[in-house]
Image (cartoon, rainbow, N blue to C red; front, top):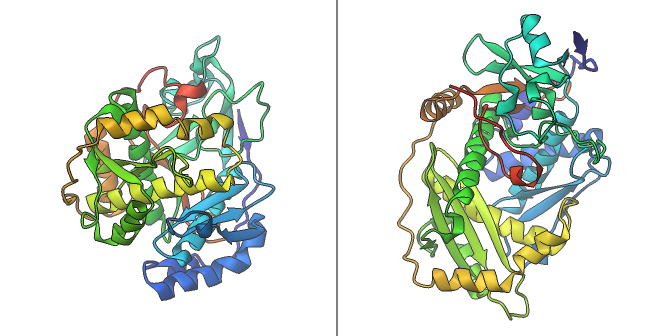
Length: 402
């Protein structure tokens, strides 16, 4: 039986307003225009503060936090960038995209898989998405399903609503069967740009999870040194001056993907441990930059203590001196990472086709853009892919057949 979600507003500013403001956001003027548009919009999303927390760490990477006290997910979202302006916009957009996925406006179907198929719905295998162990098969569980689309094709399918929602206001004693996560959720200046970000994140999380299940950080590493990625030279120099070691691992996957470990030495007065970052992009250099920036941001996340999902074991893991010293000893003579090459700029359609061909899986997406707001937000899904955090409570029972 179908039921409707709360109605969506259909009036508001033209979508081109935010697209114009954020297009070519790599230019200082454009990013300031984006902020000028965003700042007065923040109250409607419940964002009460956007704060610069860069100075809490000695490395100087611009990092901002957006605070949304009544969030149904994380109350604090972080943003990073090579400039303070980019970090500020990034933090706000991170919070805004999550707000959209907390309040999805779309018809829902309530029932189990057999009922849904009997009613004519094209249902993707519910067991192909990360879910917790249950007494009965996932397909037998009555749940809400939502319709998603194939990119560039006149084809739709239905997936568990949990797979696209970021509303985490549920009873911990009875969590959703399917894993709720922000994986594959992205905003951008256009739907196509947002989808490109979302697809890259799906690929990154799947690639990283498979790598960690294998050798992971035990595998041979490279040293990341100034000159490898010119835009990171100043940051790498500050890391070196702070006594940090930067190691990098290229990961095998359908897109260029890197893992970075930023490692402090035990015993230093300001040492806070080891931190990892991951990045994925159609262009290898941009993937490496993303991984490095995420590693530095994760370090500042712990220093600030701002994220409300950080538990004590996270702090203990980062300060595991024996593990850190073992890692440093194992990779003491790591060769310098060669200059990243490979990968060409791709538009969203080319990227989706490339990833679908490489993984032999269909990609689906859900448009979360609201007409009364005008910020393009999308959610991308691929059945059978892994995501970070699955080992804590969730797993994929089986991978969907291509």
